[in-house]
Length: 139
Image 1 (tube, helix red, strand yellow):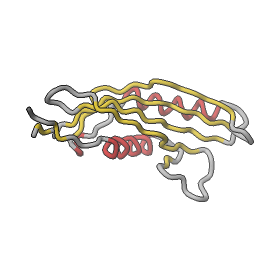
Image 2 (spheres, rainbow, N blue to C red; image 1 turned 45 degrees about the horizontal axis):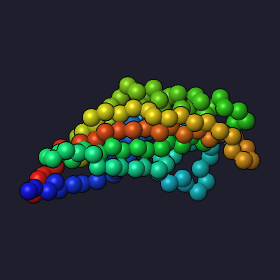
Image 3 (cartoon, helix red, strand yellow; image 1 turned 90 degrees about the vertical axis):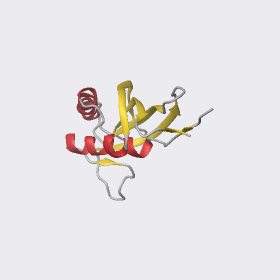
Image 4 (cartoon, rainbow, N blue to C red; image 1 turned 30 degrees about the vertical axis):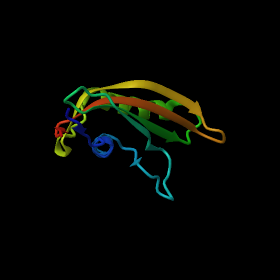
């Protein structure tokens, strides 16, 4: 009985997601926020990957949270930022082919906007991506 040799798609996914967001946004996008970063900006939050393949395929269900930060005293700026990103993520499929992965499907699962404790607003988009490892081997 063969065993599927698996690779984790998180780095490939994050690389192309950050590249796509930076190309399509006027707001800075951070994996790790710079010390003197000024609001507004977008950060990459929690990423989860769960193997969901069949006998001879390596498929993963990946969720990633995108966080939107604003010091504006109202939801408008965060909502505009989220709308721009949602539009891009709806129309542009992530291309991970350079790393041997393929986005089979991607969809936005959840939107949330809430006030920060001291000032400003924070928004979250949860993106769900089904990713196939195109270099999967059965050993």
